[in-house]
Length: 196
Image (cartoon, rainbow, N blue to C red; front, side, top):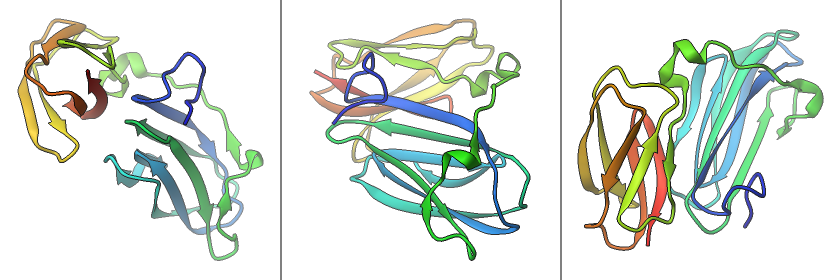
């Protein structure tokens, strides 16, 4: 029922965890996510779990071959629309029973090069809950036009349009939407929000 930090609302938030993972054995590993709602997992820059959908706490898995003693980049992204918030990450292999990844196998890493890769920067969408409009803000000036659409929890498109280039911030009118949960699909991202 909570969130990763006291300054974040208990509903309608996204989170990203990044770092490195160190396998103990040279073999195929299975990674497991249990999430309510959506989750995406990259290991060694390969997207092995892609369940960016509203859902009750559900387990998904993906596999990848890893070499013992080598650190691999790992990135876990998550969104919560409402109700309970669940995000669990586990792994297992032939020699390793399915378990939560221990702290000894996880390492912090500094993200570099984001300034050269605007697609890696996650825009923010606010406010949520919203009345008549929402704002999408990016840390970079957009150099290209970008299409967007707003969908309900059944995936039905309610609003669509195009963000113009040369800006860091765009305002979208949502006055025509009935109250409820929605997702803005834009710039390769799915950003949840609530219409009052």
